Length: 219
Image 1 (cartoon, rainbow, N blue to C red):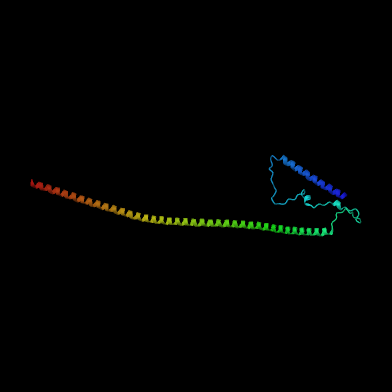
Image 2 (tube, helix red, strand yellow; image 1 turned 90 degrees about the vertical axis):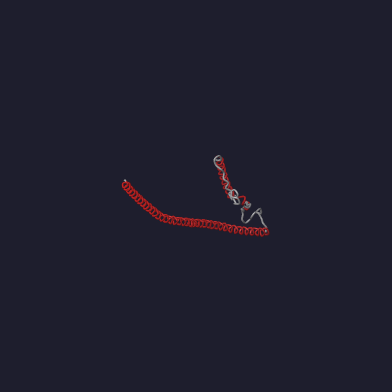
């Protein structure tokens, strides 16, 4: 009985400590309510186990009902179960134990499934990143091809400009030669005209002289 009382006292002390901690937490929350936003950390579907919930999850058990003071004379007040109850109960418990084992195996498999899902997501993400890098390279290659065409177009434009320059230069040479020839022709024509003028003037002078001689002979 002393051991049971000690256990009860320890349990009560723990409960009081938890209660004080809860009160203190509640008080601090109330004091900081104006500046603190409460965050709901509950995850839907996730089982929660706290010390406060453990007693409700335990089967009913009262140790004092099994107290034996004289091992050779057990009291008749001890809880009793028939062999039939034992056989039936053990079958139930064994079946439940197997069910829990299957549930645990299913949870283990589910855990592995989630692990593989995570790896699949990482591999998928790596594939997307690789595809992104490939598209970047393709974009760079397309930019290169586009720039190459622009360079080719500029080369064609340069060739045309050079050909035009050569043509214009040749035309300029011929144009200058033509102008020189026209200048020479103008000079020759001017010389011819001058000679004709000189000839005409000479003929006029000779005519005047002959006319003067003729007039003098008449007198």
